[in-house]
Image 1 (cartoon, rainbow, N blue to C red):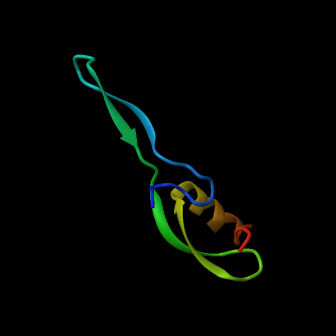
Image 2: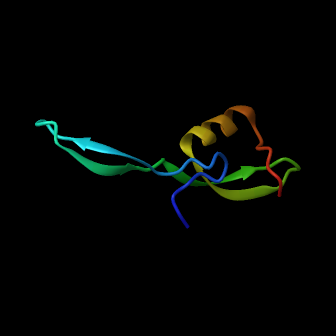
Length: 68
């Protein structure tokens, strides 16, 4: 399983490491993925891999609207 958010489908992005002398080499930016148990609409609990941005939103608004 890849490193992506199951809620917003955020995945790895590519970019450059830039040295002091301005040389550029490719690198990957991975999202901060956490395994969390959330309450989905209908009262069921589901274990998901989600990014911390989505987790903060779920904590703020309560349950998650997902089809189970």
